Image (cartoon, rainbow, N blue to C red; front, top):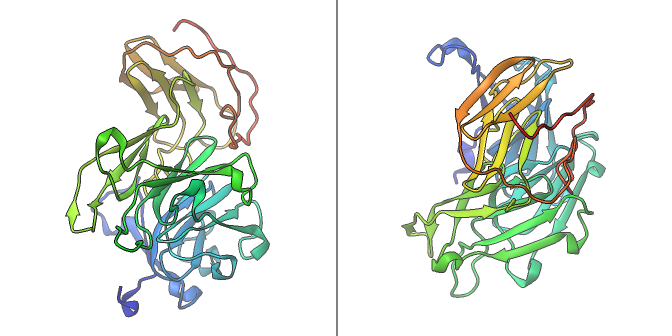
Length: 344
């Protein structure tokens, strides 16, 4: 990578404006925050701030969306190298903490989004090397399933005679302390279904399963198409009505904005989404599934609908409100009432 060509030009597109109109685009150069505030790979949104993940310089940049995009006072930079941040690709937000996806190494870092950005005490680091007895160092994106943050395996420091690409997933339990070794688990998925699978570049999460995107195989000279799916739900869920998605969906992918309704059937997870954030204030959300269609209603109006079929799973677990069962994420608003009906 040519150091002299590293960019800090952040491009913003107004998704509600004309796609081909030059006025729909604006650029801010983060080098005004410092010469090392450049070269980002991925980002995340916590509801107010957009975070840009540093690939090689270790300087995290964030933008306050409540401020003006062109105003340097709406931007901050923090050199996170002293807290252990190294190369990263992508980030994962769990509703409280922002997790950076370590690229080519095992130094895992997270930031407490409820604390001052430029204060080193707001950051935590954990060396996840050799978790569960396997080489867990080097990821590309990740995802959050409501309790666990899972990092997608990509490239590592190659062992003698071995490949730099790997398929060792790393998972952290968000209900436990970051520095607790028992909160971390590694799993080698390289022989799944009898296929040799190495090297994945992030992916997408549908609410039940994470789909890892394949890229290189073995020594990196050959591409491969061995899709990898990680089922995080199984039969332990039937439906989920959500106020919003977080600012990521796979570590490198954009989130689905606004409310959504997901169901878990014998044919897999199905979902509908409003694709529009809600305004401030009280709202009435309704999710309906009748065996033929899936509907999302907001304040008495049909916001989204799609065809869907399949038998809704009926796990023997309690219905939870304002959180996912056993998870670390919480809804920070106020829930006035809830009703679950067996028939549409």
